[in-house]
Length: 289
Ligand SMILES: N[C@@H](CCC[C@H](N)C(=O)O)C(=O)O
Image (cartoon, rainbow, N blue to C red; front, side):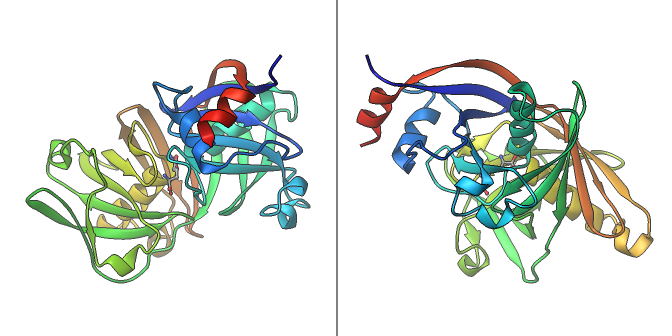
């Protein structure tokens, strides 16, 4: 009989993930295995994998073990590694709660983008402290077909290019990564957000994610967009001294983002576990070779 690997499926505003609990970091997950797990026809399907590992058991997280017991080893659907996933960290926390590893209250989660604090209630939305945005200087342009736009470079632990457009349809089918320039702005690739206004402190976006294609939502992307919109709107909390909150509509739902005068950003939104099951380890190994 072949070995079975437990998995769960979850999403945050329809940014969906295959969750692989592996406290002792015993499961080999090379990029090809991640890609086949995320394949929506040949595998389980997801925008990425949340590999749930104890920080002490993972070489990239050992140093954070004193602060955070659990490490979110996040992988994009194409198998590449990313620094941070804002929807993923909420779903990760929801999984830990469901598995009985944590209870309600504040929970520290180690990520490649540093330790994040998640606030878990018994049910309902989950809030995460996303840290501060970095706004590298320099002009960036993104394009789709004949159209191009100036974009704001925002780093939320991972890289984003935020372009304000007249119509979300102008982003086209987003079947391939939107070209950007200069190439040096994003040596490791970029997540691109196309944004329109919906009302005061209310925007809507579509996103092309590095390593995943167009997704129904991106949490770090929503934070990057809120920060770019606040700067554009003259509502930088560091200048005004007042927190600013943006409602961000995405194809898969709505996220609420608040930036405080000290630059700390909080994101609130749903985190849902929808299924659990078992993966045939032999199937995974064969396909991932
Ligand atoms: N969907 C995520 C972001 C996942 C990582 C991203 N594709 C990257 O490569 O940086 C989110 O909710 O933040």
